[in-house]
Amino acid sequence: MSELYDFRKRLELFFILGLVVIVIGYGAFRAYPLLIGPTITVTTPTDGDYVATSTFEISGTVTRATKITLQGRPITIDDQGHFTETLVASPPYTILVLVATDKYGATEKKTLRVVPHE
Image 1: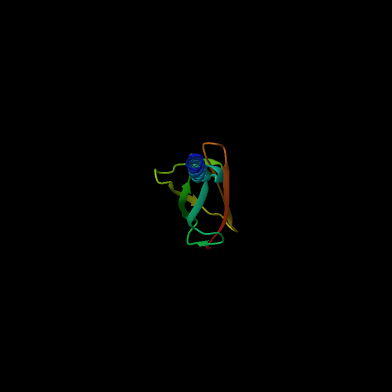
Image 2: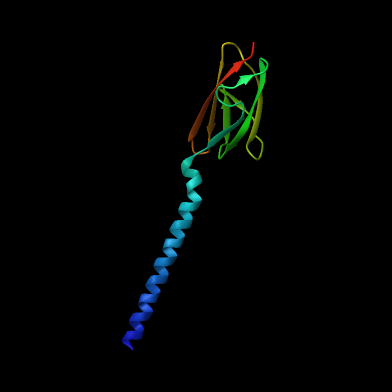
């Protein structure tokens, strides 16, 4: 009888430990995006690109962000995180600064340089 009782207690202990490991693992999986903060991906232009005219368009996506600014002014993002803005480049080059902020205050900064064709 005591051997059966010991086996049952060990089985309960392994089940509880397994359940705790699964819960902690799932919690870490769900919390990971919140811990790494927002990300900015600029589609066009890339850093160091030449733009055909003085007026050009910057576009890209942002993830896990509630606010994004370009040159210090807020820009709009759609539901999927896409943004597009039209800017004017001035010689010899223009520096673009994008800053994304999430709901916890974490920020991501992306700096690009574009050169207008003359």
